[in-house]
Image (cartoon, rainbow, N blue to C red; front, side):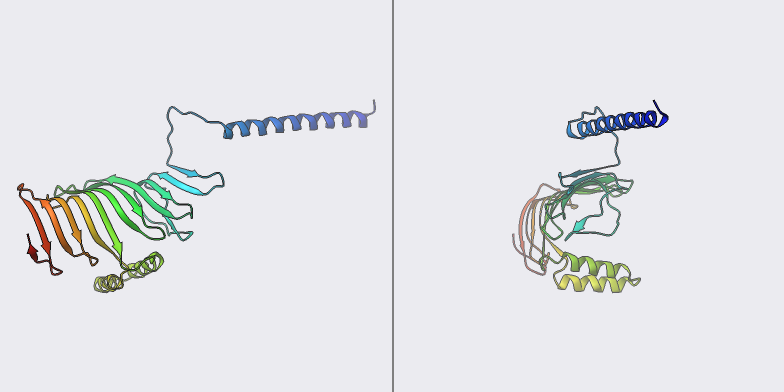
Length: 234
């Protein structure tokens, strides 16, 4: 057998071996990613839950790697967010989340529900100031005077952040509130910072109008207030 024939035979054999190894690798990878894997314990800084097509549906993350959020198909600028779970809808936008944390000054856990194409409108919340031992917990509702204005609100907030003058910032926020860009507290059911437990209803400007509660002295009260905060019936 000539050297050329021998070389051809060896090359053919090498190709066959490479082909078999490639097939085995593909089969192994396919099995690994198409079957359920069970772990007794796993450590992870962030887990992304996606659909088959790669669309993001949920992020479970620590504080450092938490998703900044997304609206109208655009990812928001990097920002500090607490550890927890962020949910995304079929359009790819953030639609709520569960976050929690604590330090020497405060502690809390919040489950938020966002309006479609806008910010949060409902929360189940626990918030505590560890320094003065004040806490509130319950169900909170908000409304916005201007509907679907997230991008405008976000842009205006960012412009105010760059102002060094606090009075100018406050003036800007007051103007945003006047234009209906800021949320208004509408309903809280639970325990407030004054140790009152009950239902507290506000008007579209966020002003208290109906208070049905039991105070810290176990006195039951039903109050109706005018737009200036004066009790008109109890």
